[in-house]
Image 1: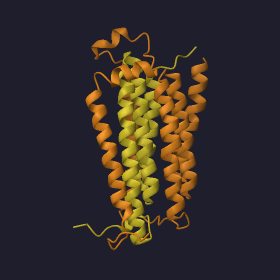
Image 2: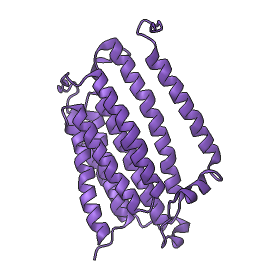
Image 3: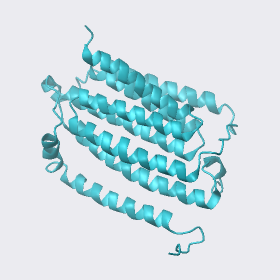
Image 4: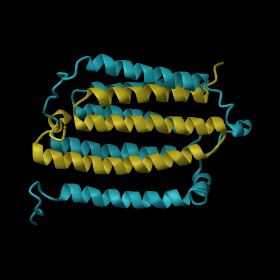
Amino acid sequence: MIEVTAGWYMSLAAVLFSIGLLGILVRRNALIMFMCVELMLNAVNLTFVAAGRALGSLEGQVSVFFVLVVAAAEVVVGLAIIVAIFRRRESASVDELSELRG
Amino acid sequence: MIELVIFIVMGAAAIGGALAVIFAKNPVYGALGLLGTLFSLGVFYVVNLAHLVAAVQVIVYAGAVLTLFLFVIMMIGVDKDEDTTEKLRFHRPLVGGLAVITLAVGGALALGGRFDWVPTVAGAETPPNGTVEALAGRLFTDWVLAFEVTALLLTIAAAGAVALAYFKPDGSEPEE
C-alpha cells in the first residue's frame, strides 16, 4: 500500500515545469512559447495546492487563485501583442524580432 | 489505492500533454496537448480537495484561455514552418542541461522535503477542504486588498489589449 503524498505531486509539478522551461528556450513560435509559460504557471499552481494540503492550510489555494488571475491577464495582453506584431510582420517567429538588440 | 491509480494515469496524461506542447509541429496539436495537461491538473485538484480551484481551472483555463489560444492560432495561421536552425552554439545541450538541473533540484526538494521547518505542520493531518465558502472566507477577509488589486489588474489588461490590437499598423483607427 503506497500512499500518494504531497511530494509526489510536487515532483510531477517539477517535471511539468522543466518541460515548460525546455519548450520556452527551444521553440521559436511565440504562441508555443506562450503555451509553455502557461504550463510553467500551472506546474506552480499544482505545487501550491500540494503544499497547502501538506501544511493543512487554505492559503495555498488562495495563492492559486491569484496566480490564475495573473495568468489570465498575461494571456490577454500577450496574445494582443502577438496579434499586433503579426499584423505588422506577417510572422510569429521571435527570431525575426531582433531589431531592438544593442 | 485509488489515489495512486489516479496519480499514475492522470500524471502520464499531464506529462504526455506537456510533451505534445513542445514537440508538436502544428500549434493546434500543441494547444490540444495543453488542454489535456490542464484537465489532468484539474483532476489532481479534486483529489487534493481543492474543489473551487478545480472548477475554476476547467472553466477559466481549459475553457477561456485555451479557446483564446486556438482563436489566435487560427487567426494568424498555422501554415508557416518553424525555422529550427540554432544561432547559438550548444544551444540545445545547454537548455537540456538546465532543464535537467531544474528537474533534479525541484524533485529533490519535493521528495526529500518534510516541511518540518514550518511551525504549523502539526495540524496537517486533515487537508483543508477548498469549498467555495471556505475559500471566500479567506479571500474576502485576509486577502481582500490583493483581491481588489487583481480587479484593477484585469481592468488594465483589458484596456491594454484593446489599445494594442485595435489600431492598424500605421496608427489610424479601423474604419467602420
